[in-house]
Amino acid sequence: MRLRPVLPALVRVRGRSMLPTYREGDVLLVLRGARPRPGRAHVVHLPPDRWGRPRPLSVKRLTGTDPDDPHRWWVDSDNPAEGVTSFDVGTLAEEDIAGVVAGLVWRSLG
Image 1 (cartoon, helix red, strand yellow):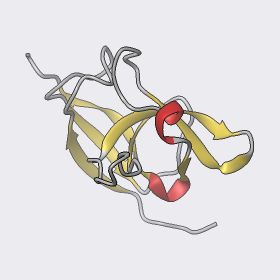
Image 2 (cartoon, rainbow, N blue to C red):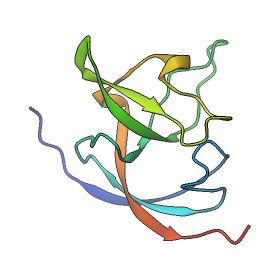
Image 3 (tube, rainbow, N blue to C red):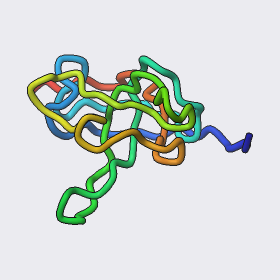
Image 4 (cartoon, helix red, strand yellow):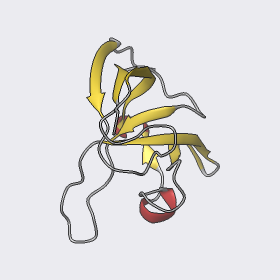
C-alpha cells in the first residue's frame, strides 16, 4: 500500500450527470489522494472517448469494487438520463480516482 498525502481542492461542477445531488456551478470540497469510499461521490479520470479524445475530470459516484478485480472501481451518475458510467467505459483503476468529495461548499443559484 502506497501512502500519499491528502490535499484539499475546490472543484466546480459542470454538466448534469450528478443531478439532483450536484448541479452546474456548485463548488465542491475534494480531498485529493484520499482512499476511495464506496457510495461517495469522487472526482475521477475517465478513459478517452471512442475517438481517443481525452475527457475532462468528472464527478462520479463509486458504487463498489469490480467483483473480478478488487483494485478497480465501478462508477455511476446520479442522473440516470445523463452521464458516463462503468457500463459505458468499464471500471476504473485506483489511480484514476483523483479524490473524494468531502462536501458542498457553495450551491449554484441557477
